Length: 277
Image 1 (cartoon, rainbow, N blue to C red):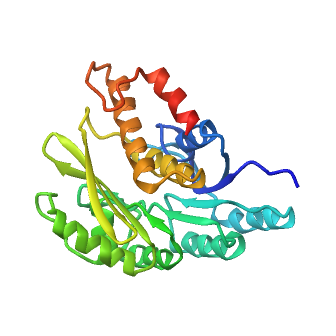
Image 2 (image 1 turned 60 degrees about the horizontal axis):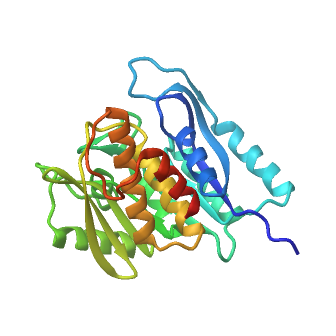
C-alpha cells in the first residue's frame, strides 16, 4: 500500500486580513510537507482586533462538513484546535475528536481565550469552563499565561511574571487534567520572551529576544509549527524552539530590524530550513 501524505485537521477560523488563524497556519504546515485540512469555525473579513469586522459564524455547517469527511473515509495524523467562539463549537470539537482520533492521532489544543491578563470579549466564564473539557482528550496543550490561569482557575499575576517553580506547578496541574505535554508561551522575561515546556514529566524553559510589539497570529504560527513538527516525528522541545525562533525572525523581518537571531539565517534561508524539518 502506498504511503499517503500526513494530514492535520485545523479547527480554527479563516481570516481574510490580519495574518492569523488558518490563513497563517495552512502555508506553514504545507511548507513542512504536511497536508493542512481546515475545518472552519467562522469566516472573518479581518481579525477581531480591528474596530469593525464581518463575521460569518460557521457553527451550523461544521457537523455536515465533518460528516462528509467521514463519508469519504478521511483520517488524520493530528487535530489542531484554535479559536472557538461558543460552547456549541467546543461540543463540535469533541465530536470531531470522537470521529477522527485514531490510535496514533495527536490532539493539540491551543486554548485561544485571551492575553496579557484579559479574556477576549467573546469569552464568558461558562465558555472558559467548557474549554477545560477539551483537556482530557489533548496530547499537547499550548496556553499563554492568561489562558493557563483561566484553565486552572487561578488569578493572573499582577506583573505578568511567574517563577520557574510556579510554572512547574501550573504545568503539572494542566497535565493532570489530561495532556501529557504542556507548553506555556509568551512569558515575560526582561527583554526576552520565555517559553516553558513540560514534557514527559520534566520542566524546562528557553528564551528568545523580544522583537517589536505583540502581533496577532503569533500563537497560531507557534501551534502550527509545533503540531507539524510532532507529526513529522520531531521532538516537542525542538519543534517549540523552531516555532519561537521563526516567529522572532518574522517579527524582525516585518519590523525591518537588523537584530541577531538564534538561527543566524536570512529569512528566505530559514523558510528553506523549515521545509526540511
